[in-house]
Amino acid sequence: MWFQKKIKPEKVKDSNTKQLRSSGIEVIEHLPYLNNPEFREPKEIARRTLVLTALFQLHLQAPREIIKKWLKENGLLTILNDEELEYLETEYSELPEQTQTDIYWFVEAIWTFAWVGGFHNNLTLNTGVEDSLASLIPNIAKNEPAEKFISEFKLRNQVEIFEMLDKFYRAHWYARNNDLTGKKSDKVDLDIIMERRKALEYTVYREFDWNEISLDT
Image 1: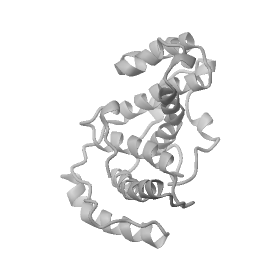
Image 2 (image 1 turned 45 degrees about the vertical axis):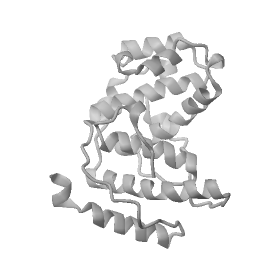
Image 3 (image 1 turned 90 degrees about the vertical axis):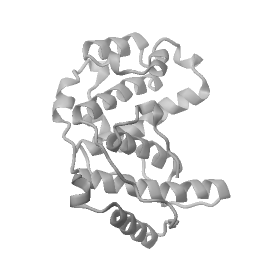
Image 4 (image 1 turned 120 degrees about the vertical axis):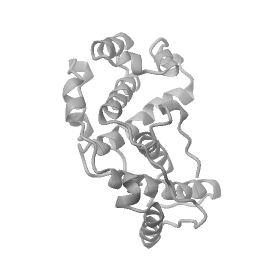
């Protein structure tokens, strides 16, 4: 397969382990290397990005009817899973608190997908979304169409994406372990890592739907 010719997953693990440790992020040896990627098509990733962008508008208190209208007019409404469709049928204030939190964190996945699509080059383990994101995605309030974003979404080098996923996978263990043991580190942010890793997993492993992705470490 392509990745076996271009790069060895074992070497990606070793390289990321050394890099993370040199920056002060502990990595355990028994985490396996990632393997068998099967990337999604750019248009599918772009559409998932826009679905999350639309749903994030709920957190911004945008009217549900406007969000639904935009999704329908841009051929995106059918992409939503049952749970996401339910978000649009429920007053935001009446959604469970955890659901509201999940919707808030969609912005990290949107930022990650923008990186995957080549719109920016700053995907970190510990710093939040930059203000520039608003200029990279359609403005739903202004009814900007989805077509331009989808057509401009070009998957960056697959090896680079695979290496980034592996890095987040290994750093995730460190961030989670810190959370469980009460340790602090300004080098990682668990919430940021989880949301960004999920977007990378979605990109690299097309066998899993958005709501089926596991974030085990």
